Length: 280
Image (cartoon, one colour):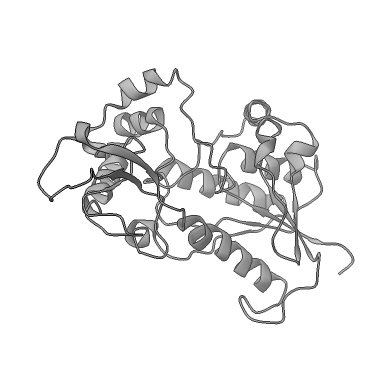
């Protein structure tokens, strides 16, 4: 190879989409491939974005690949690949009887296992396959063979990290150009292209109160699926957490009972996801 294989990890959110658009239009070097790892549980609006831009990128000579490791909806509560449920720690001496939420102390989220399983590994496997290597067994591509583009913008530069894989070097074109999220939005609008919503699984626990409220009002079918998932797994025992302790919503209350408007107001409108792990 005379140059690294340029591949973009596409989360179908604003920044990664705009980064790839800039490559397609010649503002950045031409990508060799775009990979979107499908969790099979994205918002409907996100799948519409994927449909539109898959055609747009292909028309500009950039193929899009969509591997999947299965469905978060069906597998995201497994012991080894669970989403980062939020918890409530039970009081000392609790005998299993019903108690008021006021008598419980909020716990933090469980360790995130879903991103590696549903996002990172499928992208790595498909990248290896595109280079003619087995997806998970030797030989691996040579050192530095891949330049992986990540759509992190200038205003989120604290999220950058070095690649842990020898054959992959991370690159952050938006940070190189000091391009912010707002710049990405304005650029897409100026081109007359659709602006993606924030990309995240329907039941992502890092969704903000305002985002849950928007889903509840604008996409009730999706919200109903999130509520069903939340209620179904309330009594799971994952990572030593006691029964009746797992919640999708970060305030550790059932989605069906949450007051999202009140919670969003309390956060002063600044209640946003800051995980950055899904490269959106």
